[in-house]
Length: 110
Image 1 (tube, rainbow, N blue to C red):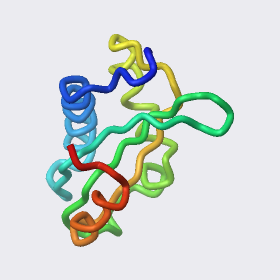
Image 2 (spheres, rainbow, N blue to C red):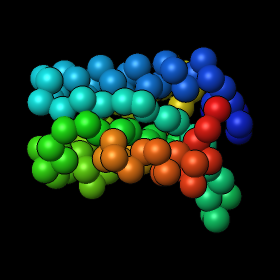
Image 3 (cartoon, one colour):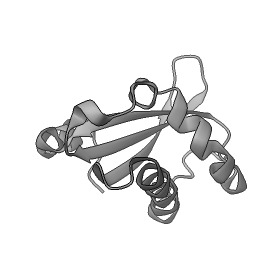
């Protein structure tokens, strides 16, 4: 993927993939969104894709491996590869009650 290639259109496509994956897994037990995507330069010169996911509902229902960052990327990477996304992908679940300040601090205003 080209550095800086995450534009609003691609962000929406990635968000849709993440949304479908979570909705399929949780079957309405939790509500997700907004979902924001951001590329980050790492200290080692590599790029990373950060996915921030707002969760509305009982945070304790999150599957532990999905919350730790291991399982969700495994589910979405096959759907991201047609877009040329091959870099490390990590995600963070943000409680809805924290989103009003978190998105400003993280620079996720578009």
